[in-house]
Structure formats: structure tokens, C-alpha cells
Amino acid sequence: MLFNSPVFLLGFLPAALAGFAACGRWGGRWGGRWGEARAAGWFLILASLLFYGWWNPAFLPLLGASVGGNYAAARAIARAPDRARTPLLLGAIGADLGALIYFKYLADLLGVVGLHMGHPALPLGISFFTFTQIGYLVDLRAGTARPEGPRDYLLFATFFPHLIAGPILHHREIMPQFADAATWRLAPENLVAGGSIFVIGLCKKVLLADPLAPLVAAGFGHAAWLPALPAWAAAGAYSLQLYFDFSGYSDMAIGLARMFNLRFPLNFDAPYKAGSVIEYWQRWHMTLTRYLTLLLFNPLALAATRRRARRGRAVGRAGQATPGGFAAMVAGPILLTMTLAGVWHGSGWTFIVFGLLHGVYLVINHAWRLWGPRRKLPGRVALTYLAVLAGAVVFRAPSLTVAGRMLADMAGAHGPGWPVLEGARAWLRAARMAAWLGGLYAIVWLAPTTQQIMRAVEPALGAVRAGPWPRLAWRCSAPWAVTMGGAAALAALALGGTSEFLYFRF
Image (tube, rainbow, N blue to C red):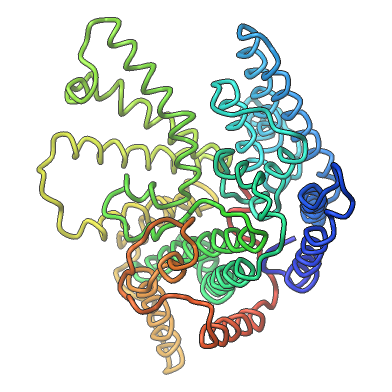
């Protein structure tokens, strides 16, 4: 079930809100363990399972096995003596990664050695609900998380706004909210604010991202002969499609959670405004960056630091300033982390090269911070975007061959300009496309972000400045109600053939 589908907007969401409100209002009459919190929590779990099973009920047992198995592992880790906790953790992580490898990578891995099997259907959201649970198990082993009851754990793992494509939740952000009695009663102020955030995200998806799909498909489908300007248009269109698609999804997930009184972490913060690749990854898919930093980069860098310390070599910033220290403590962990981040997105060579490319970007960025001049580079935002755009071409291309052709096209391998255009209509279409892309870039770099618009009512999105439009702040008022109603109507008219979110396939 998609957030931008009529069955979700007109059927599932109203029914889920009504059921949640009924449980919060009358659940307490059942008394005892069936109080309002328990009733509303179990209702959301059942609604989330229905949401997940709508696409393919055959994968509900897989979700159940993943959640049940990880919950059993969490209980076992919590009760086991210290010497047995690490083996239990490694066994649970091995089972989780084994499921990921089977569904995402096994067919391609067997193909490398000459064995062939059909690709199994990929369960929606398997990477996201798997990573969420692995993070909880790691924290439980480290003693920074505590065992949770079955209701809270099931809701943490399966709550439908984050189940398919994130954000990747941390237990410290969500579990304390379950303990607040106010969470389980429908709150009009949260319903209105969350609904507004959801509408903003829906408009990004259906009005800005989806119309770019034909241009992107046409460009990458003819990468063997495109002149430079159409190649740049196709690559830029894909970067914009990915931007508004994932930004829209993140807004919709945060808005849906807020409608049910839960606050999700910020996951997207205008990454194309970043002045470096390091800053870009601090703004793009922020919960994934946090996850990879905590569970991959930091342990790798710490292990390298300890090895150097045991050998009597310099560590810390002084050690990083040496070529050997930089390679061991910075470059190596970054390259491995980003390669695994690429593999996480898929099993093709394009994803591996994408991860390596961004790893190289980050290594260069860190080296510049250590040894480069202290002044800020002019045009650093444009330079960062161009680097990200080259990575996006590799990310989108179906093969490295197509990616190479597209990059060669952008470099002018087939001429610098447009194909020969004949007739006024052809020139009009080209002008309209250029204006369209220019308008989208203006939105990316000049328009306020969702969190800037909603800054007065959604502190969970982070402390933000007013931005370029200081008076544009949402509030519960008649003008804003009309504005959001009109935006929702436009989005509903644009639904048409509903398209899935680009991150659903990861």
C-alpha cells in the first residue's frame, strides 16, 4: 500500500485514525491490561500488519518471523550471562543478514560462479525493518537499551509510517513516547499539524517528482547518442526526481507519525544546499547516515585507532595528519562503510561503484579539511552538487556501461547542444522543459524547507532558522487551512497512475 494511493488516502488512513481514536477514547473501559494504551497500541500493530500485507500477503510470515525472532533474541540477550550475550547477538545479526542476502544478493552472487537461480521477489522494506531491529539488539547488548514488552517492541518494529522506507528509528527516540499516556489519545493539534506535513510531502511526490519520470526514462534509455544538453537535462531531472521523491516520503512519514502523536526524527534537510559532501551526507537520509556512522564507521575507526595505539603510533588529530594514520583511521573506514552503503542499496556493480565514489568524495573532503587552506571555497555548493550529480547517474543507470555512456554524453561525446529541432512546437517543448527544470532548481535552492515552514509546531524536526521566507510559518488558522486544502486537492487531482517511491526497492 502506497502513501500516495487512493486506497490509502481514502480508505486505510481514515479507518486507522478512527480506530485509534476509538481505542483511545473507550479502551480504558476494558480495564486492567486492556486499557486505552494497550488497546490503541495493539490496534496500530494490527493496522500496520494490514498495511504491509496489502501489497503481498505472502510476505507477512517473513515480517512476523523477523520481528518474532529478533524479539526472542532480545529477551535471550537480556537474560543471558555476559559471556553468552555476544554470541547470541552475532547469531541474531547473522540470521538477519542471511535473510537480506537471500532476497537481495544471492541470485547475483551465484551468477558470478556460474550458477543461476531466479531472483526471489523482494519483500518491501526488508532493509529498513531489519536495520531498525539490529540497531536495537546492538544497543541492548551494550547496555544502552532495556528489554521491552511485546506490544512496544512490535509497534517499534512495524509501525506503518516507517515500515517500508524508513526513517531508521532509534529506540531512544520512540520507546519513551510509548510510556506517555497522552500518546494514545487522538490529539486535534497533532492531527492538524501532521496532516499539513503529510500534504506538503504528498505535493512534492505527485506534483514535483512523478512528472519527471518520463524525461528521466527517455534520457537514460537513449544514453548511447545524447548530445550534452539533453544528457545534462536527463541527469538533472533524475537528481530532482530523487530529491523530491525522498523528501516527500520523509515528510509523509513524519506527518503520519505526528497524526498518531508520535514524533519521528528528521530524515531530510535540503541536502543540495550542502557546501561539502560531508555536509551532504549529514542532510541526506540522515537516519541511515547516523546508523552507518554508529554501527560501521565508528567501530572500524576505533579498532584502527587502538591498533595504532598498541604499536605506539600517534592517534587522534595528530595521527590523522600523517599519511599512514589518515589511511588507517579515516580513509579505510570511510571507503569500507560507503562500499557497504552502496551494497545495501542493491547487488549490482552500479551500487558498489556508487558507494566507492562517495567514499572517495568523503576521503578527499576529510583530507582537504586536514591539509587544505582554511578559507571556504567559492562555489562549494555547486561543486558539491556536481559531484553528487555524477554519483546519481551511476546510481540510476541499469549498468556501468550505461552510466559511462551518460557521463560521456554529459562531457560532450556526441556534441555540445540539443539535437536538431524542427518546427516551433519542438522549440516550445524544449523551452518549456528548460523552464520547468529551472523552476524546480529554484525550489530546491530558494524555497523554504518543510521544517522551516512547520518550525512553530514541529520541534522534533530540529531547531531551524526561518530561512529565506521569515514570515512563511504554518499555524492553525483559516488561511493555512484553505492553503493546505487547495494543495491537497491539487495533489489528489494529480494522483492518476500511482507510482511507488524510489526508495521502496531498497
